[in-house]
Figure 1 (tube, rainbow, N blue to C red):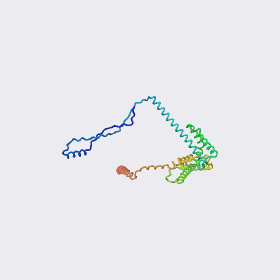
Figure 2 (figure 1 turned 90 degrees about the vertical axis):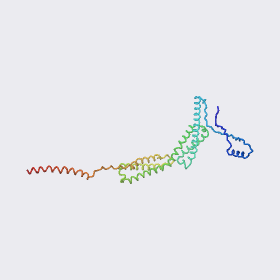
Figure 3 (figure 1 turned 180 degrees about the vertical axis):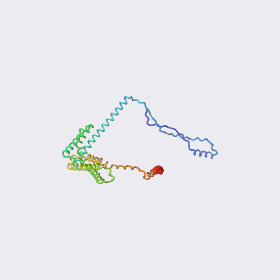
Figure 4 (figure 1 turned 120 degrees about the vertical axis):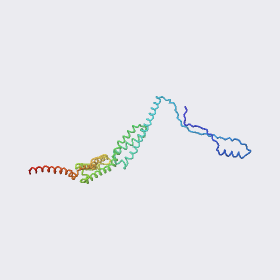
Length: 306
């Protein structure tokens, strides 16, 4: 079979001499009277033109279905090998990076040293050193699962220490947010009582808001007192997540009451003017009351005179 990479079309193009050169030769022939007139043969030039062609090539498929299936399975197997190799290398790099990172942080005053007891720091450092030695000796060609187990074993010792450091950094801001939230609602409660725009809020609702603020404030100061008596290398009494949850709880309890819309006033019923009612009643009284008495009294007077 022939495999083509490209295709070209070759064309020969004949070009004649320019018309100006023909006229000059005719003029020279006429000037010479003795020169015989001969037919001029125009020399023609040949030029080759190349054109690239688009083409498609079809070849009969010689593989059977069984051969195609076998080739596909082989390709999938090779892809799995590459995937496992990459995942194993990534896990080995994760283990190595964790060892290097924690080995320096656990002895640094600005990092994790203050958040671990002497026993924890000693056990963690020993475990890091042993794992590092294993990694470059027997464990260099280990499988992914073994590397993952080594990482997990180290994090059992290191994660609690990291958590204490993380909580120590995030807790002050969480407490400040809760305190500002309590103060905001307390300020609103102190100024909203008696105002017209909050007249639709009931006493029970105001009481609920006061109770929620007092409970959140008491809880916050109680937790801060307990946390203040705990060393940095001990687990915190209250976490940042718990403080944030308390802030959200307080907001959900008071904000709907604080932003409760005032009910719209009921529309007044339209009353007809009294003058129109009076005008409609006067003709009825004059027609019936004025005529009938006159008709009834006159016959009574005539009978009495007779």
